Amino acid sequence: MYKIEYLPAALRDLTEIALYISNVLQNKKAALDLTQEIVGKVDGLAGFPYKNAVYLPIRPLKYEYRRMAVKNYLIFYRVDEDLKQVTVVRIIYARRNIGGILKE
Image (cartoon, rainbow, N blue to C red; front, side, top):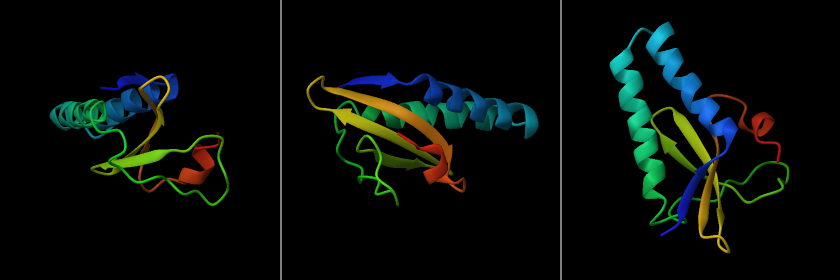
């Protein structure tokens, strides 16, 4: 089993998603459901971190990222085989400019 870690940017993304759905769209239940679904899918990576495709950006990045879709959001993560760790880097709305957000 791999350890799961969230970078601060990913935690901020998750919080902002939940607040937007809850406050702006005024749907607290949908915000809670989506948050739980995202966390559940990420937790599933502990057993199968390589089940999602490698993200192939237009320009090279510092790390090899994998991505997983949950509803309209993409979860970007990297796997550290030496540490047996999955690091969630960002959680991004799928229609955003992904390349401009993932810079490392």
